[in-house]
Length: 378
Image (cartoon, rainbow, N blue to C red; front, side, top):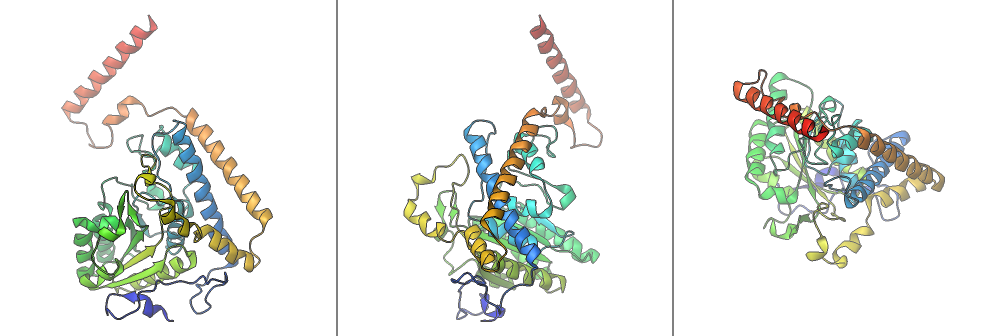
């Protein structure tokens, strides 16, 4: 089967089987296998393990009351690591809120992420964001925003600017299938289609928008075919197959760089865990929904593929597990000892010169804090 057969929407008769590279015998389809060195294959797996280890530890921290909130990406690591792998360093990412794997692949450190989750003064957003709402300006990763889909028009607008400036880069934006019910999705898709912006729309269809199932988000046969309404290509890919994700994303990036416009990638995966640490999925789904997807775990599938190629061993796995657990423990220790942002920083970063009313409020706050401190010392 060729790649073009995975394009959906231009013809309703086109098969909608998702693009898949990993086969049931744990080998790769030679006709679709992307060019990835053995070194990179191991690095991709390493990042997937690092992502899962980070998520598990952060959820535990939230349950212990040491951070306020967290959103894990368990079971979806292939979508984020694989898609980020297909980008170049100069490309821009406009994330949703479950892209830890993409951040780690691009070079974000566990320490940086721990600082953000604790909201201390080394957090790039100075403690103004919820935990897990990262921002890495030095990596061309724009801040997470809790309101749904606000990042998608931004990604398209930035891509339009790149095209006007003839910058040789693309923007990639992540979102869930539930977000396609938002108006911003259609506004962004239409603009991108009309102006052929170099944008990769990465739709992670994990089955749930908190407690709302994907089945009530659209009457269409699938989400990828929505691209057809806006005049560009939509592709379905097995989101638990990291090699297939690389193929689909690399193809979309190459096409955008040729000036042929955007692509909508629908990655079929499943949210194995809760939506967030504020959610209890047992209230709206049973284990019968989840267990089939545990058998399709993207980390385990890729591990078996690597083992078959002689690139994985139990000893290496044990080394990775221990290394990342230790890395996270050390990062947490540093983050917990790092003080919070100074109170006056809440008045920074909006105006180049503070207007008088802000100066008055800052002075009043600082005076109040001084009085409180003096009263406490008596």
